[in-house]
Image 1 (cartoon, rainbow, N blue to C red):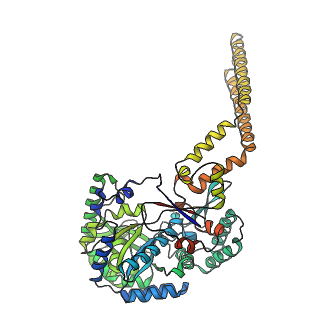
Image 2 (image 1 turned 30 degrees about the vertical axis):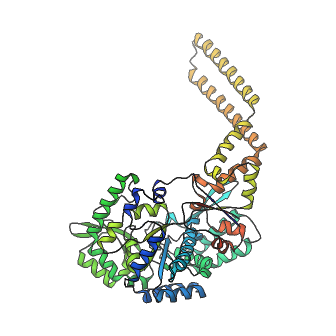
Image 3 (image 1 turned 180 degrees about the vertical axis):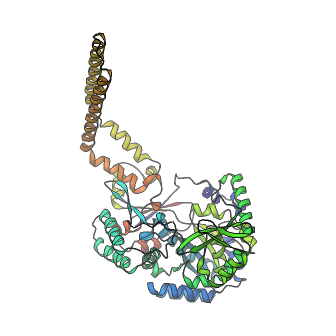
Length: 538
């Protein structure tokens, strides 16, 4: 395994400015990402009180069914004793979801280790599982590569209800079929048999999306001490009682300042990532297993679809007695993290950076301070096969990301087209049209009324010419199938669907190719959070 760093041609305006020293985006955050900020944030946290002993016990309780390593045990002890935390999180996608979930976890682990050494205080890595999310269509599939092209593979069971990932039951047969189909696409390697057996074992033991996600993530990162916690875990919901109350009490002010901040962000040229509403309570209510966003209307908290309406006092009572009936949204989740966890830094992607830029005044409403935002590592993995194809086609990773492979494919297909055949077909078509025109003129003079039939005949022959052309083109391409598939594979591997690999494929595609040491070897690389794109040659 070898590490290279590149400046990616894929430009995100907000992220680029975040890495710039003097850009106006910094006014939307508490800290810049630098050494001074980590020292200041650590000092701030050390002067605050957190219920860390209770939090550590909740995490221990959550992780115990999945297995706790010695490293995790040590980090739990550190947390009990007041350790700072680097947090990242994601929805509980099948097969861990897209690669960026794993990249976040790697970023969290590496940053916690780095700051533990630099600050000389305990810092532990934690992954917040957004099991409360109900958009199952975002997490019920993955993508593979079939014949050089990107293929979507989905879990066949569907739910029309807005149930949370942590409470949505999995159909064991459908999940097993999904996993086997995906691994069939991956192809057989020396690692496939054991890897597939391990994944199926986790699938069989899982009853929900979040169970399956946690089980796999824990196996991948357990030895690195990654703490895992599902936002919906009942003990954690009980722990959140006073914090839900604070969010309810201040919901109107929070909504107003987020709307104002987002408007300012838009004026600064960064658009509106949330499209916030002043009426949004920014809290979901869970009814019959479904999740409904509450709005403030006429002094009450309502959702017309769920037919619920609460006074503030009623909602505060729910927070006190049944906090598991409440759930955070994109605005309140960062606030809840700040109230419940001593967050040194939050690791997120470009989308999270955008919506966090709207939240600084919301933190201030609750007398909180926004933590350091750490952009996660961007990683592209290059298998040995892809490395060989890059050499053969005289392309680099950055050129493929700049659509050079696609351009080369278009040029190649054009170059192998048989021009002589095309000339023959064009000539035949012209002759036929000319003969039809002569026939039409003759029939018109003879007072025949066959215009519609002649037109239909011409259309039929035109369809036959088109069919012939397509078949000739198909055979032309078949003659050069190997070269064409190679260029398609490069595009599909390194820049699928015109986006980063990490947004499309599961890590198991690369574990199947490299072996189960993939995660350990990635963490061992000299990577650190920066504005560079990490290219890993497997």
